[in-house]
Image (cartoon, rainbow, N blue to C red; front, side, top):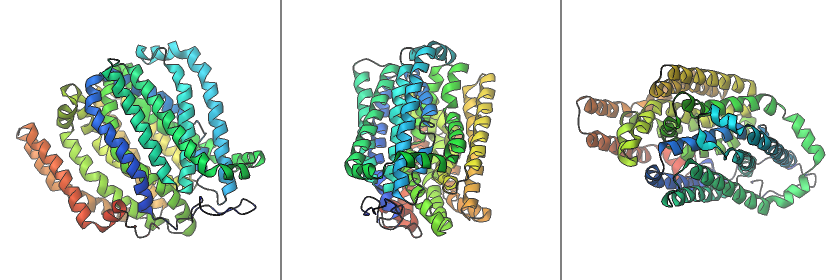
Amino acid sequence: MSADSAPLEESGESPAPRSHGPNFSKDVLKLVSGTTFAQALVIIASPLLTRLFSPEAFGLLAIFTSITKVLGVVSCLRYEFAIMLPDNERDAVNLLALCVGIVTGISLLSLPFFLVFEPAIVSALNAPGLAGRLWLVSPFVFVSGLFLALNYWNSRTRRYGRLSVARVLSSVAITGGQLAAGAAGIGTGGALIGASAFGQGVATGVLGAQILRDDHRRFRRLFSPARVRSVLVRYKRFPLFDSWSGLLNVSSWQLPSLLLPIFFSPVQVGYYALAFRLIVLPMDLIGGAIQQVFFQRASNAERDGNLAGLTESVFTVLLRIGLFPMLTLSLIGEELFSIVFGAAWAEAGFYTQLLAVWAVVWFISSPLSTIYMVQEKQGFGLLVNAANFVTRLAALIAGGMLGSARIAILLFGVSGIAVYGYLCVRLLMFSGIPIRRTARLVADALLPFLPVGAILLGLKLVGTPVLVHLALGILAVMLYFVYLFRSDHQFREVLGGLGVPGMR
């Protein structure tokens, strides 16, 4: 029985929601349904937006977003992850209250900082288009940090439909605002930033309103200042270890948007931003949904001793979903972007080719990364994220010093493959899956791509028309998923909502 439907005991010490009830695949589908619409809207609007806004405008949005994400990841000092862990509702409620208090304080403290130091920040980033707009970082961090806390409460209570509604409305607000600004002739980075801030506010407001409507009695009954202080100490490893880990992780992701304008210009950031925006869609659409549901299931599986079976099932499905299309994109990305988004964006397509293999490893390892949180191995996470930050920083600086944005992006991707590949193997080992078994699963998932990849590469080398190998690559991906859905029982269960063995 879920937390929303379970009666609260007089003491407020009702157990955490277990994995019985709605199965894993149905919970994933609740998240995917909303995210599918939201991301489909982004895909449909992108060819229009790339013709209404310049690469420089997208670059300014990416720089602003990078600043807010770096601050946003520590806006709750990572206590939001602890919301999933307690066995009783009282601690979870007070962890949520703790997160709200922390994000409010951090947001208020950041406002005077950006008002005072805006000129220095704008100059250092070589982004004069951000002048007069950095004050928006503070409210943006507040709503995004609050959304994080509400999101994990929502995952704990397994009311995934609420999150889907929030994502859809946020995507409509952001995309609609950007299109309206572009159509009105306001094709600036400021317009993109304003629409993004508005959309994040919509998402937080909608999710918060739904949670208050359903859970306000629970909050009033179980909230206790003394308990807030208690959980602050009980889960202190999150701010002491995982906040630094999260800060390093997110900072490493944002390094291209912060370093490319220093070595080159916001234009290169715009190319990278579009490439990154579209290459992460599989993660947002499927991986992100699986991550949230997997975190809740893994917390229970760790207590019940069933983590290995759950992890192998999720790892196998992620491999089969991500490997074939991303490897295909590594061969046809430049041509695809040139046709869909216009010739001016061909360079962004080439960036996707450089990043595609890294995207596979990232897509697979990210949902599984909650394993070290479930096992409270925050020290390991900190070491991995430190390695990620250092290697990416070195890669981008090397590319910048060589005067080539392409080399910088290539080295960035290579460093990610190394670090995330190691992370993935170690996470599987933590859950009880040996390396030999992991290698076998990867080899099985790679086999269907090998003949298709050889044909595409051969056609490109002999100089066939662009439309030929582009059409062949798209057709191959479509046929692969049709084949997968018809022949792979486990894949059908996850995407078809029929229940996954070992995931209940």
